[in-house]
Amino acid sequence: MDAKARNCLLQHRQALERDIKTSYIMDHMISNGVLTVSEEEKVKNEPTQRQRAAMLIKMILKKDNYSYISFYNALLHEGYKDLAALLHGGIPVVSSSDGKDSVSGITSYVRTVLCEGGVPQRPVVFVTRKRLVNAIQQKLSKLNGEPGWVTIYGMAGCGKSVLAAEAVRDHSFLEDCFPGGVHWVSVGKQDKSGLLMKLQNLCARLDQDESFSQRLPLNIEEAKDRLRILMLRKHPRSLLILDDVWDPWVLKAFDNQCQILLTTRDKSVTDSVMGPKYVVPVESGLGKEKGLEILSLFVNMKKADLPEQAHSIIQECKVVECCHWGILTDLLHKRNQS
Image (tube, rainbow, N blue to C red; front, side, top):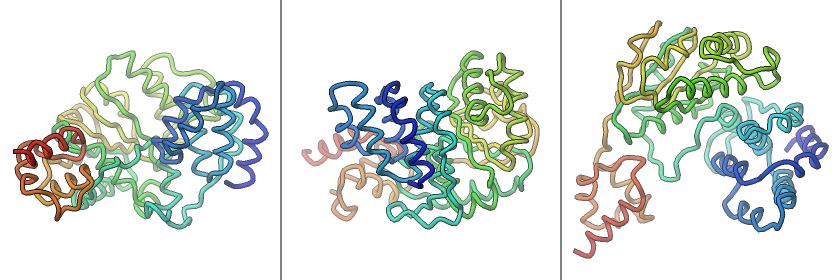
């Protein structure tokens, strides 16, 4: 962690230790890959809330810039806006020329951009689908810095969200196409009040220093206007990712001259919005080889060591990236016994 970030954390250590509850904060940091489950247990073993907070901060002080940013974002997400403001001045700047992370092969620049934008980490069990990732990147490149829509569509469980995240997990692609960053919104099935809350949270994330307004937008139209101004003035050449869109009317709130990548089960959701539109279909299952690869990862075996029954399991449950570990291992166990 650089000196500026470390000093800022030390300066406000007492306020943080006094006020934060660590449980949800740690959930965010684990999902970002900056905190381990064993570290979480160590924090939980402390007898009081203040001691748990003190232990967590002690751990963060020994970590890197990415951990500071993850902690800052977790504070924002969990409603500790005032505490996050104390740390805002210490947010480290990560250069796009930083080298690759020795574990994942992903640069610090990519990790920071995706962490700040709320893009999910890779799932524990992950197989590459390079052809689809390339197709998504090619469609996004066609936007050429102009407003437009790229839709990833397919049945539930086919890996649309994983593919959307993987498409932006690329240093050169981010630098060339979206130097302004990436902003992820998990949409889901919403009513108007739920959509307003999503928009408010997004506007707060994009305007963390409150340079445009100190209050949240009061209705969807105001939120749409605020989002347009923020994307235009503070976050130009950035990508907005809308994950799991169900209803066409929801997209109208985001139809404001942005570059947007969305995932959905229904490719017609963009029929009511303006601008260039491109689609990337995703099939519901993986091929046999990919199916065997992901099954071997789930059950922690080499692909060559999988029993003969593995082939029929893949056919039976149409293995996809988000298959439940228990379902697969139970099936494999039953097949071995039969």
